Length: 254
Image (cartoon, rainbow, N blue to C red; front, side):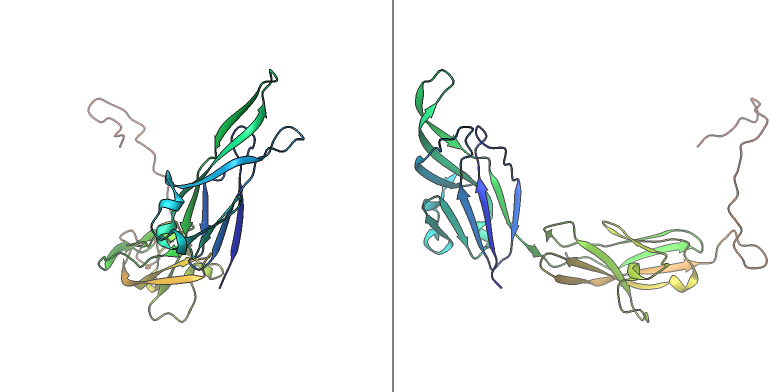
């Protein structure tokens, strides 16, 4: 798969363009093109253009011939390898710049940096199985431990349950008790049938890659300690402080 991405770099004095981060695929061509947006009708032609990566001239970098190609005002980054990640800037010497006092000068302009990062999803970090212990009727929060690095983020997080008849993400079920969060999943009003082993699944929607955690989160559900004699959980009740407030019996505030 090959994709082409083209970006124009402007300068603070002549352009409002401000790109802080650009993501690209591992196999791609990324083109950065120099451009000056002048306030006058007369275009400014630079006499010299230099491209920098992390403050260094790209022509002095190892592997320049394999990873880069310069054609006039354009810099082409080939392949999107890890070593090509970084902050890119363009330095241009522009002549015949007329100031407000009609003086004509030659000046050097430096663009704002553009951050290029390779789109990816890493493996889960090494971790252990997790155990969550709750009572019936409580809210359970299952962590997605060892979250991989996902670029661009945020990643899509969901959970699957071992032995479940539902093959997809539990949060995709209609009228579901499951709610995916940025770091895990929440199960509201836990019932005994929610007990079991859950696996976190992370998806990079940009690269269409998915990874499943090798470790599970085991949920244990105990009978509610507030259950009535009929076995049904009691409805929530509001508890008010004591009406009497004496020195020997003050209202306790947690």
